[in-house]
Image (cartoon, rainbow, N blue to C red; front, top):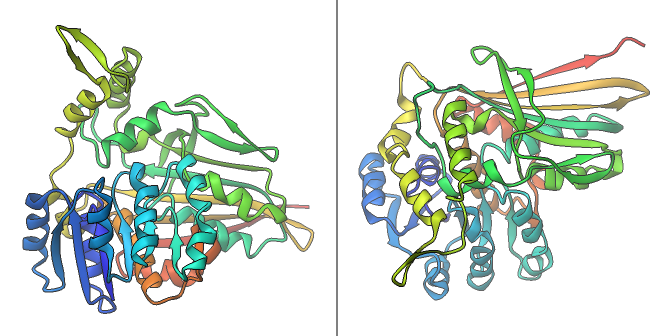
Length: 391
């Protein structure tokens, strides 16, 4: 099985490469990335004969198609802006596909590719990072055990860093979008938008996280779960997170810059024929505060761990005329691991032809117990609690 990881020298992609290289079901892993320097660091760290590097600039379609040809699966670990063109390239190259998410709106566009993938006998599973991905599978676990569903509520809790920590732990453009674009929620059977950083509540995560403030964020789970389980009567679905894993102080600094226009994509004239795009400057400056790739590769082996994450999905509904609530919590203390491991496992399932032809959200094609059990090998553990209410 050969898997191409587009963006495999990036912060999340390198964990996917690490996971794939260690799996006996995978024969070859190709890092397709513009950064040869980072790719060399990944290969030197892993010391795996399975891993090779191919210099790639995603915008060059012919080169992208050529890179993908002969592979079984493309794991897209690049910024979600490239999801659609990479899917186009997969169709041309005859390769199945998975990615880390499309931030709601792009995911909905990707789903329209279903017939095109099915006609070519190719499969795609969308939105498989830690979240989206794990919550979709958690929701299916509960949905299969309920006759009807009232709500699906997703909570993503991350151990808060110190107030003076200004680091950004994943793609800077995606962080900016999550902070500034309007979150979508499903309420009373309709998709509605909310203000960024709204809907605050205190949520009790599993220790050592404890109680954290969480708020709405634009996310792909909300785009698909109400549709996948509409026959069960879902009335509400939302995704909440605690400051995207950053300190409140760091988030407030970025929002001030956004208010002053530094996140705008329109060129700004500086006079004398000179212009800049403020957002490009902001991203370039913020990228300097992203941890090194060595830190990500070392995270699974770090001890004692200083990074904790729990993804929780609560599903309430009816079973045999009784009100029941499921709470599924997936906990890890292994750094950025889930965001790389989850798509890697999905890519392997795609390579094994376990997913039917077409384009699907995770909840439609991933068997929950088996998938979550595979994550336990990487110390990503899921616990389930069931609450029945007094009649």
